[in-house]
Image (tube, rainbow, N blue to C red; front, side):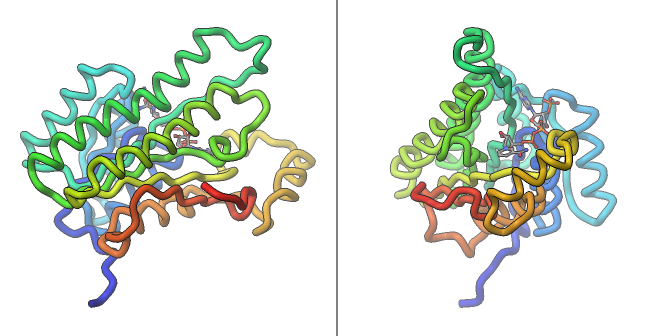
Length: 254
Ligand code: NDP
């Protein structure tokens, strides 16, 4: 059988698709043939990403979604099912950081990061599982975690806890719904070129790159490639795994 990376006929939802890594994932899923629902709190920015996908011949639309608000999540999934009759692919990409050393970290900061990066993944995956099981589609759930969830990082106890939680969640859900043909996997990016890394000084960048086996920061497209693979038929026999896309910054068990 020929390998297939095509996503023709699939409906995909990308949370936090309005910029950065999520935008790149939305573009890549669109280029692979999926109809992409680009979701974020800022509908205008999501609409611009959807517009760019349609301008280059793909299919996409924007949706307002706050992953921390259960009513917003259920309304978004309801709208997708009403319009498309199904959902094949969920990419839980929406995420935030709010860094601080433990002695100074407020409960608000802890709660905020956990609410978006972990509870948001739970809420969206739960709605996706309901739809996928009901419509009997061989669904794909891809959760964007971070190497920080595997190796830790000072100043990011909240973020590391949330991202490590996503990995455990991925493994448990994979075991729960695998018998129904739905795969659940995580992708753990390392240091990715974003507006955040643009702000680094030359010395800081050198120090960072020095820790990376492949000798460069990653790009959003590096992450998107891993997501397209996990969403495709080519990855039909892969579930419960965490694909580390860190250029060798972290090499260990996941
Ligand atoms: P950005 O800050 O560039 O983008 C975050 C996206 O999430 C935006 O689209 C934002 O849109 C959306 N978002 C934030 N909060 C919510 C919410 N409550 N509901 C819905 N959407 C929300 O992030 P990155 O592209 O850098 O990161 C994307 C993912 O990759 C995150 O999960 C991050 O943890 C992970 N990651 C990033 C790395 C990096 O180096 N950048 C490294 C490892 C992992 P809006 O504000 O309009 O809602």
